[in-house]
Amino acid sequence: MSNFLEVKNLSVSFPTEDGLVKAVDGLSFSLEKGKTLGIVGESGSGKSVTSLAILGLHKGTRAQVSGEIFVNGVEINSKDESEIRNLRGKEMAMIFQDSLTAMNPFYTIGEQIIEAYQVHNKVSKSEAKKHAITMLDQVGIPEPHKRVDDYPHQFSGGMRQRAMIAMSLSCNPSLLIADEPTTALDVTVQAQILELLAGLQKDFGTAIILITHDLGVVSETADDVLLMYAGKAVEYGTVRDVLQQPQHPYAWGLLTSIPRLNGAPNKKLSAITGTPPSLIDVPKGCAFNPRCSYVEQVGQACSIKTPELTPTSTDTHHLVRCHLESSNRQKIFTEQIRPKL
Ligand SMILES: Nc1ncnc2c1ncn2[C@@H]1O[C@H](COP(=O)(O)OP(=O)(O)O)[C@@H](O)[C@H]1O
Ligand code: SF4
Ligand SMILES: [Mg+2]
Image 1 (cartoon, rainbow, N blue to C red):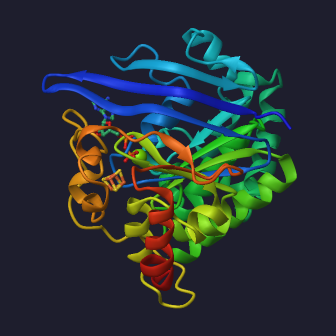
Image 2: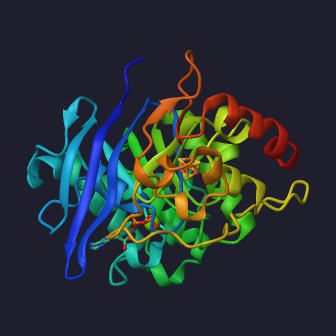
C-alpha cells in the first residue's frame, strides 16, 4: 500500500532576535491510511512545529520551511495558501491540545461544526446542522440535538474535546493530526477519547498522527513511533521494536524512568537528568551528548560528528541515530536496559 503521508527531509527554522531557532531539522517519516504514528519527545522537541508544517500553517509566517511533504501525492510546501486551504478539512485536520482556545467562544458548538462542514460541502444550513448533530452523537455527546446549540463554555473539558473531534472529523479527513489531545484531561476521559479515535479510525480508515509525551498512550494506540530530540528523529520504528527493543540512549532514559506500577494508566515520562538543549545553539555532534551516559564508550565522535539515522540491523525498518557500535549497543541493552523495562 502506498503511503498517504510522506515527509521528506523536513526542516523548519525561525529567525529570531537571538538567532535562528532550528525547530525541526531533516525529519523524514511516512504513514499509511488506517495507521497511527506516535510522535514522542520532550516539550520543545519540534512536534507541534512538524504538525503545523504538514497542515501548511507556516505559510505567510516568518518560518523558513524546506523539504517535501506529500499528502495523498500532493506536495504541500510548493503549494500556495489557497490550494492548501482546500486540502485542510477535507484531506487533513488537526485536534489541538486546548479545545477552549481552538474554539470561538462567541459561536455555538453547532455553528462551528456547521461552518467547518460547509467549507467543503455544498449543503443547506439545515442539512449541515443535521450532520453536526450526527457528528456530536458519533463522538458520544448525550442529547446532541440539544447540546448542538450550546456554547463552548457550557461543555466540560472532555465534552469540548469530543466536540472538537467532531468538528475536525466533520469532513471525514483522511489524515488527522492529534497534538496532545488528551493532556489536559483526566485519566478516565483520556481513555475514552483515545478509544473514540481508535473507533473512528476503524470505521473511516483515517491515518492518525498522535503527538504525545506519554509513552503509555503510544504503546496502546500507535503502530509506529517516531522519537524526537532537538528537532531530529533519534529513533523510528514499530511500537513493538521501539518500546521493547529501544536502541537510543535517550529512549533508554525515557523508558526506564516510567514508573512500573502495574497497570497504571498514567505512565508519564519523568524527566531524565539534564535539560533539553537550546535550538539556537544546538550541541555539536550528537545533540544528546551533554545528557548521555554512554559518551565514553564512543569517544570523540559524540561531540564532533552528528550521527546518521541508520537501520539497527540489515533487514529492519527500526532506525536509530547514535554512534554506539551496534554490538556494543545490543550488549548494553541486554545487560543494563532490558532488565529495567
Ligand atoms: N513561531 C516561533 N518562533 C520562534 N520559535 C518557535 C516558534 N514556534 C516554535 N518555536 C520553537 O520551536 C521549538 C519547537 O517547538 P514545538 O514544536 O512547539 O515543540 P513541542 O515538541 O513541544 O511541540 C521550541 O523551541 C519553540 O520555542
Ligand atoms: S551518539 Fe553518543 S551522545 Fe549521542 S546518544 Fe549515542 S552515545 Fe550518546
Ligand atoms: Mg507541542
